[in-house]
Image (cartoon, rainbow, N blue to C red; front, side, top):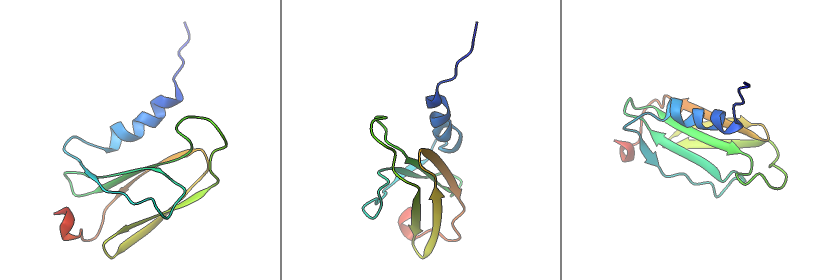
Length: 102
């Protein structure tokens, strides 16, 4: 008679709440970062969603230290500061999308 909510519930909520039906997957280049678990989507409303995990998916080993995730879209740039063992979701209103997204 106890309710236990798995931490995975909160992880999945980042995807379920912000990556809406009709979203398209965008290519992500993580070569300049220790963060390897990063996904980006273009939503039907023109917003871009970035979901990034600053942890190890397998749960083994030490999580990476705090990280800065640099997001560059055309001439537009933003930096997300991520704490160790965190998941971050950003919903971005980009002033003007490059034509590759149109």
